[in-house]
Image (cartoon, rainbow, N blue to C red; front, side, top):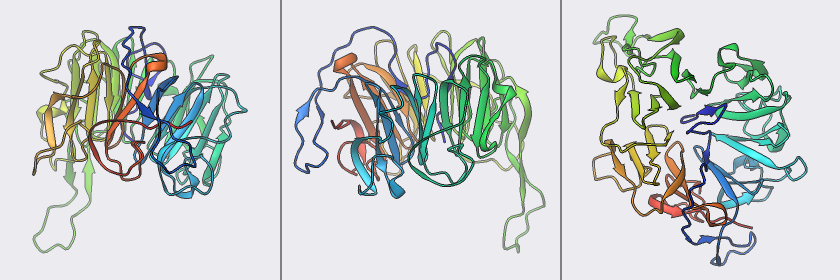
Length: 414
């Protein structure tokens, strides 16, 4: 998928939008909690206990007082919220089958599957399984959470058709799905690191402030100053199809060029991001592929200009968002679906300079989905979830399938 950062220890960026810190910022804003069977306009109620939210591509999930709520695309009952619901579930519903496994402490979503981690370290996954992304030894979809055979884990991460888990005791990492296999296998390169991202084509790790990246470098996402693709044969005017192409690959872990000590990392398939220890944000990579191996400025880390000191960062498919200690939220990149928090001008979709998102109380956590963004504001019983961007399947959780260009409260149900 896109934006996933895996954190093994205390760090600024997490897998999902998860609150951190104790700075009280109570902002009593209404959220909607209608009864599941009542189609009438809902009653406004305060929200209590929401600790994280994780938007994927066409669905989202949240963690509320140890229980998991999901909404959005529900083809094949893939949300795990029960049978008989429509393909587009537009408000959060409790996931069935997790009540008896103990409190849930972490959630992770991607494309059309989800996983949850219990307090005891067990991992349960559900949804689509065409790429073995559930880690269950087959390709059968699951409409209810099913336990993955693993040692007790401290974290779970999901990315494009694969998942990973960190062992609670030894900090070893096991992954499953596309590129790994139908059941979890150990990945020695990821063992013992502080953070890692595996968005699909490339991977990066962070250990003691130093980054290493490897894999696809077609868009310069490794940050070593190289990138691009070349055709294997000369182009011809009469050819009916383009020849095969070869793109840059980096086989061994390589340090991005000229980075200061790093505190947190994030990545999509096209870009890699780093947050340095002084609050500066660095970015490299590009959308698409340049058909030459020549050097380009975006093949090496570039500091994102015009940002105040940042404490948290999250990456979507082609956009990123970050917030300050005071809760100011800034977003930049592609705004085709309103995921930056404003409506793009006609004929424009790219906004490389960060813009502040208006209409929000101070933000305590941020999570960028594929073409959407979600944020948390407030603390404890005053926590409010907001989402905006693509909403074709109701993945914003506001009770509609209307695209939102500005932050909109999620309607959490009892």
